[in-house]
Structures are given as C-alpha cells and as structure tokens.
Length: 336
Image 1: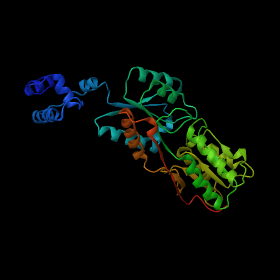
Image 2: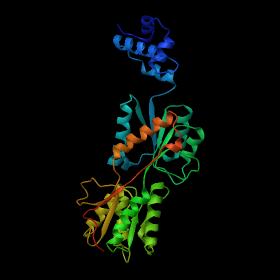
Image 3: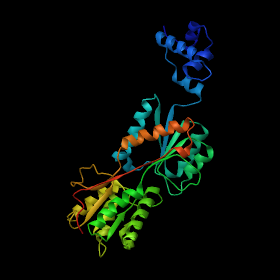
Image 4: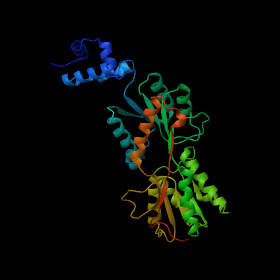
C-alpha cells in the first residue's frame, strides 16, 4: 500500500499541515516533532510528490539558462563541461537545469516570460555584454541570478568570472620577454565583456612597455573556427606582419592555428601563438601555448552553489567570485 501525506498524518495523529511543514523543514515545527515525522515517514517508505512539494514551497526546483545558441556551441567542449558541472550540482539536490535556446531578437521577451511566470527559481546569465540589459532587468525585478562574467552595472550583483586582465598580462609579458614587439590579437565580438576586457588588457600591457599596436593587428568578431581561420589569413597579409598572436577564445583559436599551419608557418619559430583556453581538437596537431581556465566543470558547480546562496538570502555583493587563470607554455611560442 502506498503511503501518502494523508495516511502518514493519520498514522502520526497530526494534521496534514503539520506533517507537511515538518517534512519541508519549516522552522516553526519543533525539533522533536520533525524527528518523529521523519522517522515514521522513513519507516513507512513515504516519498513526497515533487510537484506538490514544489507548489507548497512556491518553487519549481529548476534553475535556468536562456541561451542564444550558436552552431559552434554544440561542439564547444568548454560550454558542455560548464553545463555538465551545473547539472551534476543540481542533480545532487534533486533539481533540474533548463536550457532555453532562443534567437537574439527574442531573448529579452523570454527573460520577461520566465520572470513573470516564475518558471524557474533562478537564472544563470551567460556571455555577459559590456552593457547588459538582461542584468539590469533581473536586478530591477529582484529575480535571483548569477552572471557568468561581469558587466558595467552600478548596483551590486552576483557574478562568477575569470580574471581577464591577469590572464592576458601573463601571456603578453611572456611574449615581451621573448623579444616580441608586434603582438596581434584575434577577439570575439567586442560588445562581449570578456573580449573587451582582454583587448584592453593587451593594449595596456603593451603601452606600459612603450609599444604602440598596429590597428591592422587587432581583428574582432571571431567566434568560431571559420572566423579564426579568416582572421589569421588577414594578419598574414599585413606588412609588417605580427610576430605573435594572442587569441581571446579557444574556438577561433583552433581556426587561427589551423590557418597558420596550412600556410606553412612554423609555429614557435616564424610565428608565436597563445590561445585563451587550452585546445582539445584533432584539427590542431600542435602543443598550443594557452591561458588556462582551471576547473571548467567546477565553475558550473560553483555558480549553482552561488545561486542557492543567493536564493536563500545571501547578499549579491557577497557573491562575487574571481578565479585566476594560468599561463601554460607550449611549442607554439618561441623567441621573436
């Protein structure tokens, strides 16, 4: 015979309300009553109806990501590892992760629908922009969210990020020590906050070394392999061409390295290359020097834990986490 809330309450001689509150950990239920309810529930094999429990608590037991998916995302091992870390952290708490792929023009409408309908308990905002209306909207609505990356926003908000400035400085200073003076950068779209920060970091580092950057050596809007391949071809066509290239994302980094190899460039001798994010791709037969983001799956887990803390009352200003990248030397870097 299946034990439901009504029969459990009858066995205990308590009201359904008291039993429900004891099972869900409400503080007004004293410890002795809660322990008795839990013990009898375990003895009788009682399992709560998850739908009813969610309704009682006013929660969906779902965290969400609204994501303008690009074709390259499905083959992006970094993105999949982060999502895997989030899913694992939620599964451990009997919760789910919902990913809502949207077109860019419908993104804000989807945010509005999610918030007004309380379809999830919290959101993770990815690919943060320099000026991000999504973060302003969620902050105004006081809806729980963690920004995966920072943005320009005056009010305190919760975010998780890697130190873009520190990572680029590590790579640029290493190249400078090897005698490189013409250092190029291949960037993603500069309206993305990480891309803007990484380019700014390179310009500052080179400026501190007394070096000006040839504008032709700064190529943007490279989000995937094909764009990275074209960016490398564009840089090879300049005169004088750069002696080193820093690529600010691993997807276009694959294309950059492949284009240089196809052009017969000896990496580490004729041209040095550093990529943000270590490459795991059979199309690149080289040990590529990289700026490594440690713990990709752990980052997903961390953001979920931060979202729980935010939902449970921790102030957003106390949930701002900056992890440090490291520089990993490779065969693609040598003296100028």
